[in-house]
Length: 92
Image 1 (cartoon, helix red, strand yellow):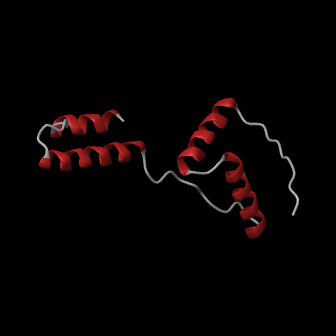
Image 2 (tube, one colour; image 1 turned 180 degrees about the vertical axis):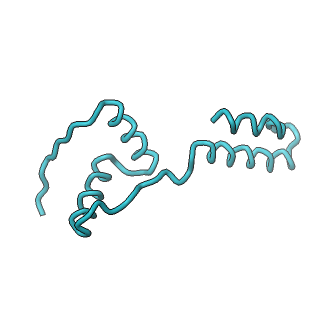
């Protein structure tokens, strides 16, 4: 099946955020719009919500937990105290 070039207008800030989100999800912006268009055609409705399942703090918390595991083996590993840990989470 042949393809066409399709152009849409978005506010620059929205486009930038969309590109960043799609990259985080591991797909291109073009792929996201193709997924959307195909799903609309198949279901004949606006079909779905794409959500970021890992908020930014999730990755940071995961990294901190790994550091704490390392500290159990290597006491020279840097890490945050319990209070510092939750303060950092609140700042995110």
